[in-house]
Image 1: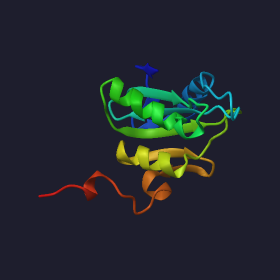
Image 2: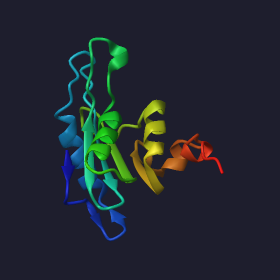
Image 3: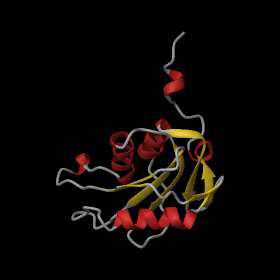
Length: 140
């Protein structure tokens, strides 16, 4: 789901509004096996917001995390870079992305990207230090 009304005022992120979008996405999760619905929302550099939810599969390894569907929505709705990101569990509480999803988010980060975490707002560099990314593959 993409929304035009971004939860941002100037350069300040409205973390409550971004978490509310993640909670809304969480309600659409398909989690019949784990019963652990997850929702995610991102504020992009252009002011758009995009959200995603987890989609489980009977073959557990094929399950898509909320961050995966969110990144798919970014691409589907015109691309862009993530400025701010929030992820919530079934109770609506902040949830830290797993390592795989941190790597996925890193690929689509804007400079200085921030994440709402269980320990407060952190930068992507703080949650994935010394990350491997596109810049490691660039050649001259």
